Length: 467
Image 1 (tube, rainbow, N blue to C red):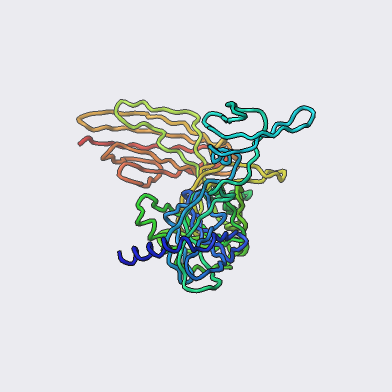
Image 2: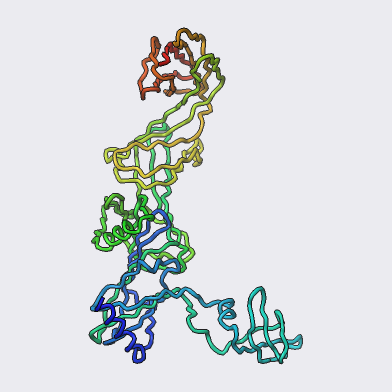
């Protein structure tokens, strides 16, 4: 408490003899690191060279993010004792000039049709709902002409600016690093997969799409991306995570030429770009994240719960098309094996004439290594099914039923079709012509092999007791 009071005392006594505010522009940046998270959040570490004066210093960091969270700002480097910091986001614009001029004298310039200009002294009375001026003792509302100001009002900045006041012990040049959290920066992953002729392999590339609406540019920045959902509700947890990220010494991995190096960090995954990048204001930028060829995939045709299996049901369907899925393992043995951030995968395939066509897209969640990726492409055109409950009964709290399903394949190659079906509780399969797999307490599945230009039939008899 004594130290705080002493600092304030020294500060108040030094104000009258303080050095003039020193503007530290973005051309003074010596090192810039930007770490972007999924949920419109970024950590900026901005190191600039500053000419410090012994005693009280007041520096203005020009060009910080317009969405900076001032309470997260930390200035490090050299022996400094922070006294005060202010984020000035009242930016210079025609409207802000007029707003600041209320009660002030300005010039009103009116250009006549013959080009002659008439200049009059005016006083700005109000800008609420329109411009109100006092001109030659009269009140004018939205007068014709333009306003000329003698100076820029105080506290208006051409760029978002963080002003910091601090004490130093020496006169010397120092590298000061300003770290802060900000909104206005986001990223997402987009993937392009090219399917081969036999639907057995894909070549997949991943692009990171960056979106900068933070109100400033980040030139020659080291870029890192964090995949995972960071909790921004509990302030304590967020500040701990920020501090850990600031302390981390990340090494760029050049194993993925042209792409991004990936590593596990805390409970998230970190992707580092092995080169400097310019992230300009109001820019959408794409950078390469991964590129892998000959990834083994499996085509899957799937029916999910086409039957309604309950008492007195006469469930029946005709010419039902299955959903078409593409599956692959995210493993090193399958030419992948890096954590895949959530995003959209778009799948293309070449037709008989060599034209690349779009065949479907699906979103994926954050996918760790050794997990399966499953993409829904759409519904299969050449595969159809008909099904119905052929018999059912209910007696003494026991439900018996038999259903059958006929799958037809119009393709010139055989296909495997999977049926996943939910059952009532406590069900027991008594008879089936294709062996099932019990997926859960209330679900079973079958894989039906259908020959080219042929059909196959599944018949299942089961019962379920009510408890």
